[in-house]
Length: 265
Length: 287
Image (cartoon, rainbow over all chains, first blue to last red; front, side, top):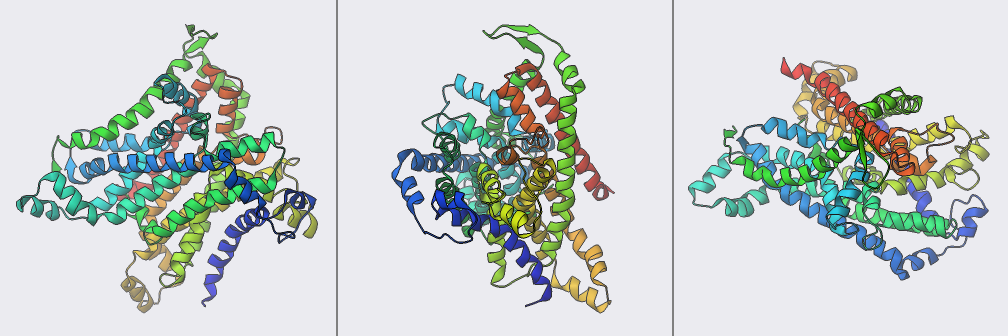
């Protein structure tokens, strides 16, 4: 054990404390939480989790969130793939300007777009659908996906494309059977970042939904205001929102660091 | 080498349509509102640039903008050096690397309103772990619903908790790309740890560090959900950052004109500062 590994250890402990606190609260009764400080649950209970998994409003919140996040991830990566290919392989009129314009959309404050988005999606009849949230989230996820994928694609030598054409591959067949397997890691990283930013974003998701596609966050706020302050229940709901992200990150753990390192500025 | 090919536009077309639909239509809506006055019923009156003037002159906007710049400056000054230090002290290979990376990335994957809510409860006096520790173990009076300074510190610590890992991950990605030979050469030359950092590690981290600083600037400047859930902008207006103020005007008071003008000013400032950062940080590359 080297001396300097103390720094990451202290940092990770700092990161884990609030998460530990949330998880430990989720196993307490609300009365125990309100009664005062206790490091471990005194009366261990899974009631909060039972309540969530038996109430459709609650578990549909999770299903809705996962639905629009998945839809967004598929959509973002699917449109970003050909675009990133074009940026990495060809020079064309206005390519630099287009690339920069795409990135500026990553800079727009979501608060600016909340109201216009509501009007836009209401007027085309998509309000309160999973598709609306998935489409809205492409605003910041597509530029990011293009950026990451372009970085990975630039690392693949152009000779690969040329050899394939000489061998008589058509473009779509080359792209799917030869090119895509070569940038698997990039697709994984791009999908991960799309998943992450769509999963954590709540302002637009809440603005664009009412009942049918209501995300878990909206369910949590409503419960917080209507049923008093059910802290145990909220803690359990919060804990459950961490799990999908944790699963996804485990799959891409060896690639996350690379994902951004390859992107160009 | 990239070849000249105008057909590439067809590859970019889906992205272009999707992003243009999402960006241009709402942006035009905002521009529309920003130059008109409405009394409901879809009646609009030309207002010119009055809203812009009104926003730029209002003390409320200037105060929110000041708080926003202060917040972003503090965030960058803490998170960037801290992220570099942590990345430098991480192990380069072995069993612990993926474990560290996964644990560090965890806060970034929690929905933003949950982050705000969990820190809110975490900091409650008597009940929350942090609040209990500071009030009852250290004996310092700490209540972020009463004390603006405590609220500020809590919002900043929460953001450091939430986003420092992004800087760590990016810097770490830059560091692992340095070949061992560089370090061996430095060792033979008898270089001090500082000069290893200054002349080997820092230049290698430059690209990723630029991305990290840009992303942290954009995201901290546009931050809304976490501080809103944590403090609600209070006590008073002390933690009302720009986005929180904007949503208050747009959705709370439904003053569409001023809100739209403010949105455009806000976006313009973000773009301008990002551009300045970008130019300053990449100016050596052009030489």
